Length: 129
Image (cartoon, rainbow, N blue to C red; front, side, top):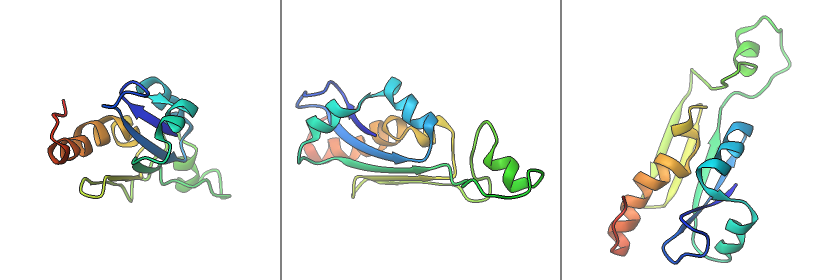
């Protein structure tokens, strides 16, 4: 999911690309950011923030009564045993595993807009709000 934080084409906008296994995330990113082919075109060969997200709950062929099956087919998939949301501001990277919660899965929102952008702003001489 290529996305732009700010108007596409603005010299102030920042581009990110999120890889996710969640249809919820892909659909919600359209609401939260300017995303899609236009954002990818604006990226060109420039810098971007790579974002990787997984709900961490692969669908297994198993007994429909098992706990794994119930978690994988829940209306809000996540991995309650293993959950990590990692920000790497110096490398401009975000990794989220095991959470389906919006703030931990829509990585352009809190993770990029607040945490990564704060370091970018400091390094590039602008203010992140």
